Length: 382
Image (cartoon, rainbow, N blue to C red; front, side, top):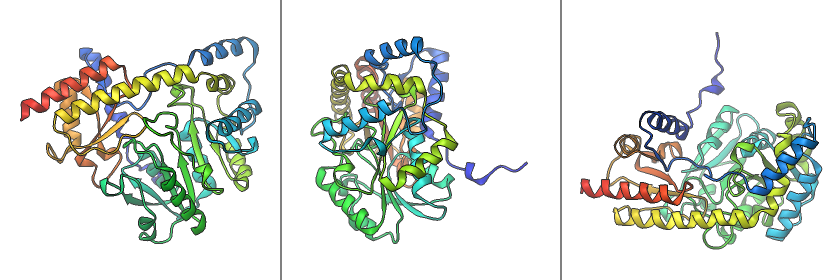
């Protein structure tokens, strides 16, 4: 029987690494996870308490396709409080995680055959979702020369574009656009009729200045957000979009047909997440400690070429002085050290064989021990 060509996308390699790590853990019990891009903490206490209360009070039926009004209003208030940006609740669409949000945004904004640019390195699911939808993906190589962010000169050089997908802070590099960089790219896209899709799911996890929102610089941008990262609610499958007025109804129709609604329990409980910043900022403080520990160990081990890790919980490292086969290197580290890491081919199909992504979202004890093992391994090779 026929299998649709749209399914012929590359695997999400980090999931393959997680599977191999789980197999090793079952066999030996010794795995330190530097591959997982998720918080190691549960949802904040206020969210869990709200969920328990709602379970006893609400029948948990379907909601409006765009989300419960209370949550949409609270998200709109969040933009006013954190960024000083006024967002009408009607422009907020609650989604099944950021992944569901990306599917809705891509379907509403782009037609089959459109050309949409993504950075290399960048989150692989953008590329794979767009390809599955019949969109032509235009790779934008970024590196140290541009601080791992795209430039308007690059956009000028790739021909006609219908869209640009941009993440700040970025996965895998952790690089955060400055307000000036974001303003320049937003103005360029708006003026050229290029739909900017801004992934801001790591907002709240930065180690210097806060990350700016594209909503401050563009009236036509789509913003993708999630409760998964800063709010530590990955398995609750809850995210949101902020969309221009003209896309509200198209995205609502798509959401009705594709998802009906985001999980009802998660929506009601998620309202409480915005009042848990003290606990959540404590998580970010732990990430900062882990980040410093890992960066110091990598420096001692001779890893000198790293992307600027301004935010999120990743370090993207050039390992070409050790190998030009990062999947094999990651396999060796898992097999010999019990340290799981993600090869760069997940994020950059052209140059990723020279890079590895480390995540430092786990406990400080685990990150410290993993860093020690990696440092010792490299020193033995030297």
